[in-house]
Length: 504
Image (cartoon, rainbow, N blue to C red):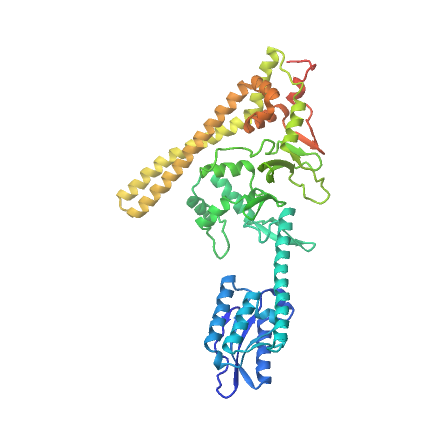
């Protein structure tokens, strides 16, 4: 019995009667022999030894919420005050079981003093004298200290887990907790992880509204749990907005880099956020993110994170980059500030030149080729979205015919009309987005020579998105060797360097 305000256990008018308060607040205390049943048995034994009976017990269990624990404690106090004259004493197993803090102890001592109901600890008996009360308060103070210290240790332990890159407690849906060498870590759940990925793909690339998405998962046999096969709309909204699936850990309202493997990539995440109207599409969040730089030690992508620090001038934001496997055992613990990478890029560009019209024309060709796949993907997405838009008109006609034939109710007709309108809005937003991307790609390619000249002169002040595209075209990716950036061989940058002959 986890939590229970006890009914009278024995009713007797001849024997002395006792009231008891049993409390347990952690599994450790149960293992140490302080479980509720152990405490209640001790109450009965005490009452019997003193010629009485245990009549009523209030139980505060570890599984109760804090509010419920306080509620039961207050009810015990109120009952003791009202019925103090009927009982020979109020029993507790230990003094620190009676009161979790000094404020509670004062309330119990007031009942003893003002209502004449003795405070009795069955395993730590003390007299109701100045000396006895001093001992009692000392033991209560030690108990309160231990409780507070335990709480602090737990919080510090959780903070350390987050700093190491692990979830502070239970991992989100799509992952599972396992223990390796005594440490709880998270890995992708072999079944639920696929469901999460599928949900993101349906939203990002098929533009399904959440209600349709939930139905599709159910139709495909991707069940939330065996006992509850269908995802709730609320749960699906929570999943689609959870950055844990992007590789982050949530703690105290902020997101921190995690060690678990992401379930979705940045592009898919951004498309989902766009579908909810929260941001314009971006293939990256930071200049040097989205796999633009790879770690020379392990080959994994370098990711960025933003940190806020309080300085004399106020709160300042710093951007750092590190390997996604930065916290793995044996991995170099290297982090670079964005300003440090900017400086290295400026050095690499120092002798970049476009010296002749031939090189200028070739530059445009290189830029178009580098961006060709991105443009093609954008065009494919646009055609698919337009196809789905054309289907909506057919669905509207079919829905109207069903209503005219009175095969569906007015309420159902209105609900489906609303769903179609929502989906149409989402699809039109995707078309506008794809067309804007295509225009941006073509414009950037045609202006590549001038953009590159400007980049060499104004790299530190340029827009993040433009920087990112320039780096893709010029370098085709970078490698972080220790704290230094290196360029792979055969990149356009090599052909733009001063002194390199142009072969056409």
